[in-house]
Image (cartoon, rainbow, N blue to C red; front, side):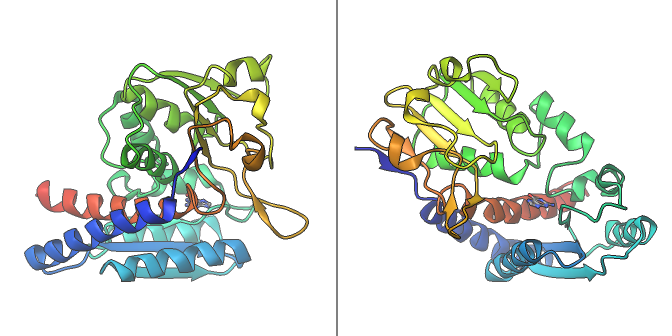
Length: 285
Ligand code: GUN
């Protein structure tokens, strides 16, 4: 019988630890770790994420600054706002909610955030540090997955790890983190020839492609640990991951459900990054 990896339980446990550390930080430094979240426009899904980030911050005792900007905001106005936050001592982490309106260049925006305040870890400096294995800030989704694997004592060393999907936000950094833990890592994607023969090798399979139910039982090695990053909304309104959960359940040793697996970890890791950034600021002084 497969063990279900419970992201809510792990998330609550990590948040308790963060809250304890935030209390100590406030005692020691007289300020709270502060996170600023900028949202441009009124995309409803983004608004929900941003609200949840705000709630997460306040629940662990952090300072949360929400900055809504209208959809017509120019790139210059956004860059100016980021400049202000870069210079603001009460703000230790800055996140610009993506996607941005089409007229704004995402790369220029990400590059304008000070790397030490870049709690998404999207800035090229932070991406480079991950390649070098010398990082402070990790992108939230892969970091959350590593936390889940650790909590459930999944041994990565020497194992066949297959990452399906090569995005900058999930697949690429995920492969680096598994490699840093001595996994034998393969990254596959939409152009991979005979995909199933690759995924069937995986002791640990991480799937992040955004296609509902794409990974089926025939693509899985018996006893594999399966991490499903996908959150796909079906026509009937239900959420489904990238893995055919019901179809693979008898074949895997552990699996993350959707919802309730990877999802609950991401904001938790954002809070952890904000705490890390705040601590680093004082330790670098
Ligand atoms: N939009 C969806 N996910 C994310 C994320 O992890 N970071 C940012 N900045 N925007 C997002």
